Image (cartoon, rainbow, N blue to C red; front, side):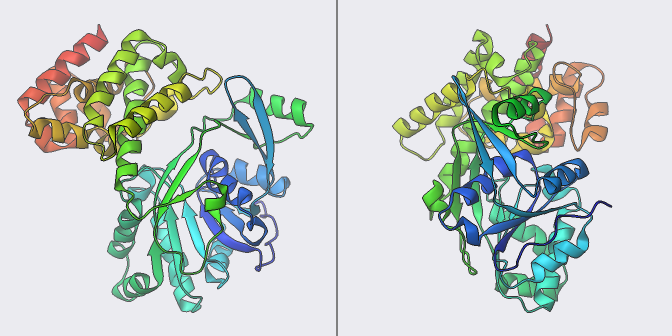
Length: 421
């Protein structure tokens, strides 16, 4: 095992992060780097899977280039908030950090699927048990994934999966902060490494490309303190649910629709899909349905939609539809189904919502982006055979109540046939 970078002085490393991916480095690490008290809030970051990324960042002493890609130019910025980087299997370093009283918060980016499947929850519980045994004091957990009520959701998972004694300590000593996060961060391409080297002179093995827009909304307590993220542009709110709904339904739901329907029409990026008149019309139809239920003033919702289109039309941000399409079985229940249920309660069969489901059915029937889903082994066999039966089986996997709704199934089948033709 390659050794991690030596541990930073404990007085400076006060944050721990789990999930050392591009989004974290374009978002939470960037906000920390821009906070006026950044020097006192270095981050010890642990990868979820990729050893290659850990090795690359360790060799660069945690430094990396953030390429902010506007429609007309690139801006290059060296981010230095990572005090140390560690591989997923470096359990000793993980427990060492969680035992440290000066560590005040753990931020988390493990994707939607990572909360239900994978080792992340077990790692968190092991770290929390070590902190309790060391009497290291209270801690804030800050999940930054697209899960509704992600703070309460994480707390519930932790309490369900541990023993009563640790659960009691977590309830008393651990604050789970709910967040809404947004910054489009496509995968880094080989050409991006060449660009950074040419423009900056730094042969960066781990640069990150992102868009100019960024949003971070947080709600919850930080008993051990936190960086002054608000001075870097973050927002602290008492009521976060309207921001969650706006983001999950309009941005994430729109992304899922484009990922499946756009790739079925031969597109590979968001910018290509929104430039397609048919996809654009489907997107606007979905937005009209979802906007009805966003608990914000109509003018603010309209401005948000206009801003989304401006961001998505940027052809220099190559946000690949295949990347967005991954793990649809985990994403659609929170991005599409809440609006579908509200529309059905009002006696409507929403074409935008059912089209998103139809496009997902086609995706699992090998139309468009390649299937990459944590439940693929279960779902792909369900997608085989005659379309009407396959569609009902797949909807049942998402929500049995929807699979029993003949009007919804009929609409999904009809739209899937249209896409497949």
